[in-house]
Image (cartoon, rainbow, N blue to C red):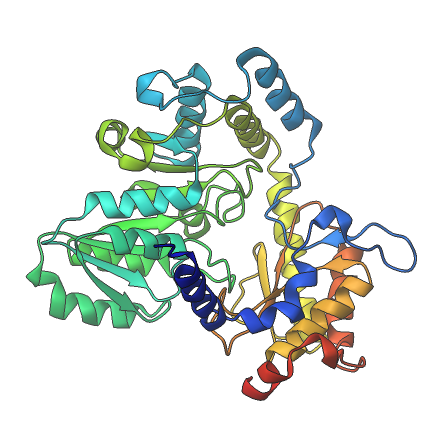
Length: 409
């Protein structure tokens, strides 16, 4: 019997519940960036939706490193690394990543999302406890879903709540893993790492920090949240990160003790059963890492741009939420129509900053999210924020937002 219509009906219902009615309002922001209409004066559109924190995505040295390896090693490695996909450049990248972050070893995987999902699911058993910040990235939630451990959530950055959970629950379990992010990608804020380290050590827990957005961003030289707070990185048991943000390529990594990485190399499902990083990707990321270390002024420029963005947003009456002024700057609005209106006015003036709505954030917390770069100019940042502020008095494009959503917002 042909079951396709039944599955199509199921998919239609799930899509509708996920917010399909929002698409008419936002889908024109979701097309190819390189085909966006230019503003009336013909200038190129300035993007604030990319993770190119250090302005390295088109650096000729990064492109040359990737291109050279592509012509000598090919596009891909054509196998899992433990059955023939290993290349010398994988080991070199991993050694330098670990050294830069202050760990004994690291391991790279083909996806940052996969890294969180496979590591968290792999290390915990049925007698263990997993405690996560309530604003954890979906990749962390995917790892939690695959873990056999008991799962609990603490209020965002509320360490008193975490301590309360630990005092009442920790003794019931063999092992306990706490998971937080170094820089939260929707709010631009950070956890109190020194207090968190004291808490995890007092209760005998492990700590995993997702540094996807904090590598290259936090700390004077971009080494992440430990450098930002001046703590010993080895007090964090595991660091997970991506190569797709400051290192402008693709893939993920996990860093920690040498014995842990040896264990992962031969048992971690997302590593063992996935192909190795394509050679050009590994070479490009490695060159970006080298430039991050060689040119720390990029980190300083990013910090200056980010702090300017937060200060200017507040001056213009915009709400950057709890952002600390490092890379990620949200602009919070009262409802979806106001958010879409701001993004529309910005795009008309040549600034691309698409709205973030359900499912990316809770339905009642829509926002624009600006990713700042060392390559942005002060004028570009100011112009984008002035456009967002002007949207509050510009004629609203009511036809862009479905009437059903306006009624329910």
